[in-house]
Amino acid sequence: CTEAYGGRSSPNKMGGRLGPPPPNPREMGMGPPMGMHRGGRGGRGDFGGRGRGRSTYSVAGGMMGGPHGPGGGGMGPGPMGPGYGGMGPVMGVTGTGTSAIPTSRPHEPYMMGFGRASAQLHFIPEALRHQLQQRSYLIQAQWTPESGGGAEDPNAMPDKIQHFHTLCPLEDLANDRVSGALGLRTAVIKAINGQDGQAYALRRVDGKQVIPTSELLTQARQAVEAWTPVTNHPHLVGLRSAFVSSELDSSNSMFFVHDYHPGALTLAQAHLMPSTAANGMVSINTPSEEVLWSYLVQLTSALRSVHSAGLALRPACLHPSKVLCTGFGRIRVNCIGMMEALGGEVDRDDLHHLHRQDLSAVGQLMLTLACVGISPSPSLDVCAAHYSMEFTRIVAALCASADGGQLGSWRQLAGAMADRTMAEMDALSVFNDTTVLELAKECENGRLLRLLIKLGFVNERPDLDGDTQWSETGDRYLLKLFRDFVFHQYSEEGGPLTDWGHVIEALNKLDAGVPEKVLLMSRDEQSMLVVSYNDVKRCMEGSYMDLKQAARGARQRVPHDYS
Image (tube, rainbow, N blue to C red; front, side, top):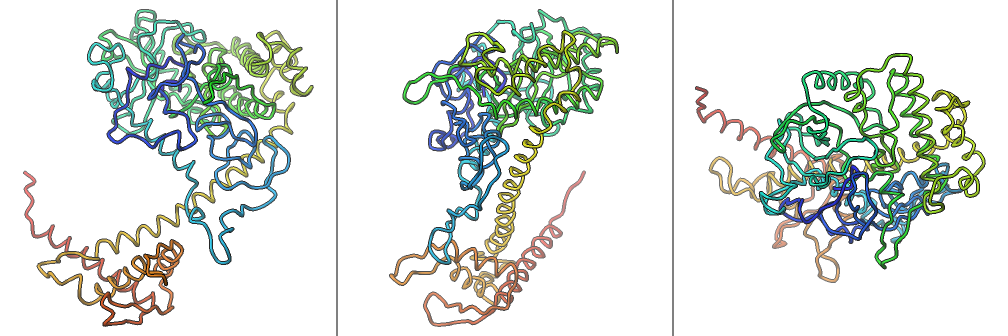
């Protein structure tokens, strides 16, 4: 997690002991967990540290080579273009970029023969599951004396900071380098809020550089309140609160609480820093024009929301080290509200100029990304030689905004690239459809899980209210035979039958209570029962209700002392 906010990695000092280790990331097609394992040497980040080497990104087919890259999380070739990685089997597409639309339905799960389908048809893709599991691992990562360097470790964490616990540094706290974007010495810590259970990123401003007075704290809280209307915007890293604490290093410092996006990369780390591939080759991930258009549309959306609320992002927040790639092609502007909190209010006369500065900063950001790996310094001539004239003209107009250029507001920018915005909407719609399909699978699995839990409560229960034969008599015996029918069948060759399709079909019929008959046989083959799925469902619900009533009666018999 060290690279999530542009800091320096020190994995041997900041461990994340969580008990059982996470799945092997290399088996997932993912890079090592950020800040948990040492990778190759990368370039310098915003805080002067060495960024961890990453897998080489590939823009082809919408896949950006890793779970946290801007191309969609390395989850397979995506039908949604480079901005949105695939979440399922490959679908045929026409064209490239965010305007790519699927032209066929996925067919790989059905290539198992007539009437047969792969088990993956019923579950989310393994890559997506591993990515979500990795996100959960990063959220729960915590510094401990055993995993770090002990009490003398400069990255040592207290048990808590105010009501935040499960602390893990996202960068080297011993690094005193001033941020090139903010002009301040800051450090970022992942923490979980004890009040709502959510993970947040605590950005501490060096108390020796910015003395946290009561006036400054009041000013910071006013900034938090001012940014509240847009803090949940999909392309902003939300600012939640600000406070002063001395629990980290015994000196008062200002803390800004932003949303935490596990595994995120900054644009600087994703595109500007060299990355080392498994074969030792060092390369720079130059974004394609489709990716840059996607970034520009998303930043325009952020400008629209922020400027309409009477606020300004400020060039510091639009620096490559302060714009995060949070997976699936999504980018978010980080550190919002800090400039207002530390610099004071802005009058209405200066606001228009700040808006133009924001537009110019977006243009400089796009120009920097367009020229990375091509030219040592950003240049419109280099951009024109490698990208379309349409893109070059918009970037040039944006760069000239601060000096009174033609593009003076987000409305003019949005109007100038309306066609690209429609393409981005198409990609988002396809991505949404794919996500809903994956959600539907898990909804069905959740329904079947409820059935299995009820059956598990009843089957083989040793006793109920002293009756040791309760699970072997009456309706419970029928449920035992049904359990064997579903899970303990044998093939014609005499081997155990592990047919997932049979299990899912039987449980679906049980849940629906269909009148179809089924033959149940005892293990000694001495007794057989012909019942319907509806009969089995009635027995299951009745037996489960008996258990609930017995549990309720037991609670009523035990006296409670509320004194």
